[in-house]
Image 1 (cartoon, one colour):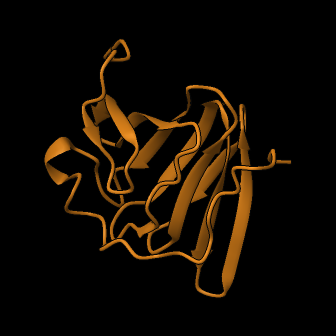
Image 2 (cartoon, helix red, strand yellow; image 1 turned 90 degrees about the horizontal axis):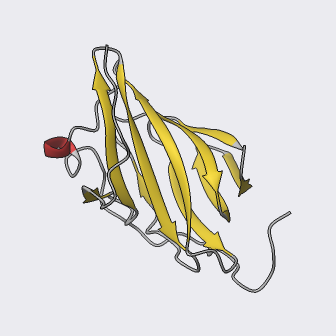
Image 3 (cartoon, helix red, strand yellow; image 1 turned 90 degrees about the vertical axis):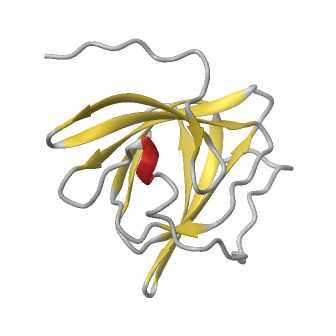
Length: 140
């Protein structure tokens, strides 16, 4: 059995540009805490091997996701949970005046891991997305 405390400083940057803290790793997956600054829109990216589940802890923002013919913009507020399947393009942007929005996400071991040495290996090249997080209106 494991127990950890959230690190005060980030361990790394995600392929999309968020600050991340490694919380716990195990045989069936791992858990990571991520923060995105207010007003920041992360680079659009696609994970080639990672499927993620996110749970928003605080802050206010939006995430754009596209997979095949499906495309969504989802409001992110405390308590919202989303998934990002393999090969889904996504970009997150934070709104409001909070210093940052934070979320925890789980990466099931069946698809890939987010170990520090693999962090850069699973992302595909970044590209310009048509979507930009609106900073001049609140999410609904």
